[in-house]
Length: 103
Image (cartoon, rainbow, N blue to C red):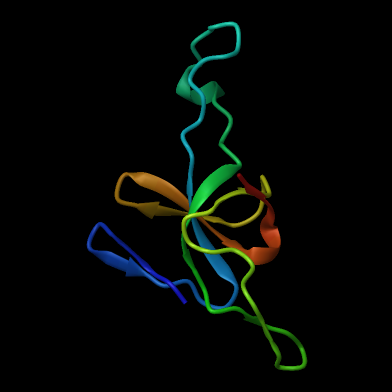
């Protein structure tokens, strides 16, 4: 299990939850048009800041974590919960909502 400390709080994900800091969204389109905050799409790629110890299935067997702190991952657009970390919004998602590791 890992944890992260920010804004005076320590976050330790439980079970198979993963704390992700979303990467900054693009502020311009490919053609150079500047996007206002209301038009920006939330990023689906972020850096893992902390991971839980693993989930437990119906038979009581611990499912190991595949991801680790420091990896960049792509997660489902509508999965997880937004949490406020200081002035930033981070995501707390289940491991099953992570679709890929970005290298």
